[in-house]
Length: 278
Image (cartoon, rainbow, N blue to C red):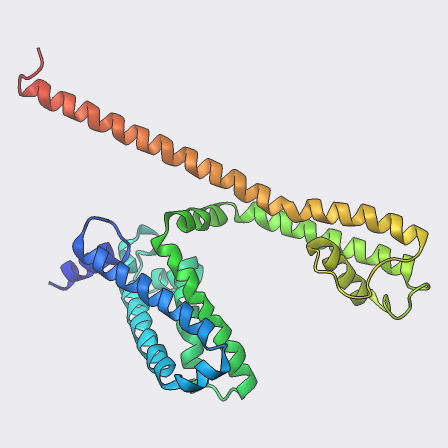
C-alpha cells in the first residue's frame, strides 16, 4: 500500500502524465497559490494596504507555508524513485543540496521558520522576507520554457563558470588600470581599488555610479576600450545559454521525431499482423 502511494505521489508531483486529473488539479492549485503569493508580496509594499489587511496577509502566509512545507517533505520522501537519488539517505541529501528546484523549494519556506528558531533582529527578518520571492522560481516546475532554461544552466554550468571567471578577471584588471590612471587626478573618486571596482561594475552593467568617470586623456581612452571589453564579456553567458537552448531544442525535436517514427512503425507492424495490409 505504502509503496504504491509513494509511486503515485511521485508521478503527480513530477507531472509524469499531464492528462492525469489528480496531477492537473494539484499543479493548478499550486500555480494559483504561487501567483497569489506574488501579488500579496507586491501589495504588502503599500503601507495602507499592508496595515489594513495585515490579518489576511498573515493567514495567507501561514497557509502557504504549510502547503509548501508539505509539498517539500513529500518531494523529499518520493525523490528516491529518481535513479539519481535512489539511496535513502545519501540520495535525499544529494537531492536537497544539488537539485536546483529542491533548493528553491527550501528557500521558499525558510524565511518563515528561521526567525522562530534563531534570534534574529528585526532588520535581518525583513531581509529574509525577500527570499519569499524564491516562490516565484517554483513556477519553473510548471513551465516548459523555464524548465528548459533550468536544464541548460545545469548542463552548461562549467562553461558559465568559465565566463564568470573571465568577467571577474577582466573586472579586476580594468579596476587596477583605472586606479593607476585616475588616482592622482581624482583622489576622492578613485581613492582605492574598491572605488575603481565600482567604476568597472558601472561600465559592465551600465549602472552609472555617480561621479565615477575618467577625466584624464589616458583614462578616457582606456575607459572606452575597457568598457567595450567588459560589455562584450558581459554577453558571454548569454551566448552560452543561447547555444545550450538551441542544443536542447534540437535534442527535443530529434526525440519527438524518433518517437513519432517508432509509433508509425509499431502501428504498421500491428496492422500487418492483423492482415490489414497486403
